[in-house]
Length: 399
Image (cartoon, rainbow, N blue to C red; front, side):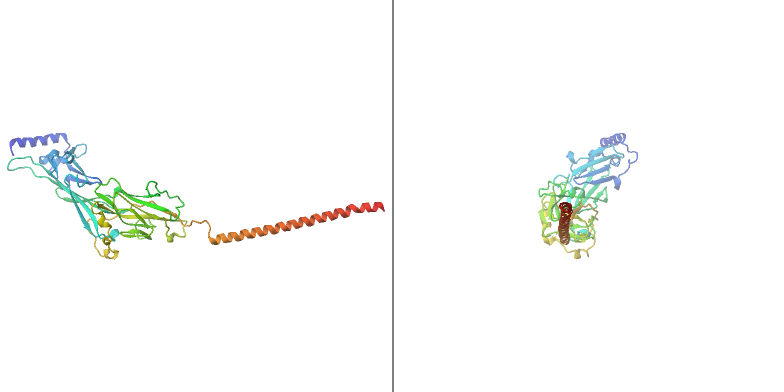
């Protein structure tokens, strides 16, 4: 390295130290110097700035995936935080991810996903390297390498999922990331999905059409939503309580209608409201929907809609957990409440009511006839009494 280059590097270090608070991090780089935030629409990297300056570089000499001349992929110094960091942000899009590598892996499903033989995870990875401007034969500056990766499982229970990210600085450190926050389930009462279904306290009538939509918001355009299985259970959690499958893969209940699946950011189906026989002695029947939802690449969604992709549960139970498959947590649909009866009285109650009504009418008629007879008898008695007592004095006077 020439004298001029040494002076330039020394100047960079002195200026950076005077502008930044490097009291605690002016040292050699360490494994923990990079943090990775695996978001639903972008990935954010934050690299401690002071170790970079200590090594002889600055933010302009850190290059993301060898892309040096694109401002969208360049690092920016953030001195508003302590310690200061160099930030990189790029979108989750295969055509514009600042040179990141997208790799999709598959593994057999386990646990709640054991009905499915192909559970996918997408890994997004890359490296931030230092660019050494030295032009001579040798250099005295260490090369910096900050590796990052984000692992996103593509199968979720709507009602669920725990997230996983991978991040690293000069070595690999595991964490996690997820698209679960982009997914939500909503109920509608019309086929156009414009009017939300409002369920009254007393429940909806049996056979009322219920339209269900699982939607991804703020999701990169390269993935579509595909429902693998949806079922109803009397528990708000996906437990071993009584359940009813609306559909599993290609097996669809005869009254369930698939309207859209694996074709966009929306997946839609409908079914007529039903009740669980287990709740027949209760005023209303209450249950919840749970959907196992896959995010698939647009070009591959159709392959997951084929029936041979399904695997029997008993086969899955013998498999061991596979790395990259995460545990799950729960998010539920609104409670669906149906009325257990649509008629106010039963047949027996109606017959008994008619019998009582007939008895009341008969008794009323009998009382009326008896009252009329009494009035007639009393009237005749008064008439004869007056006639008898009214004629006796007249007869005595004439004699």
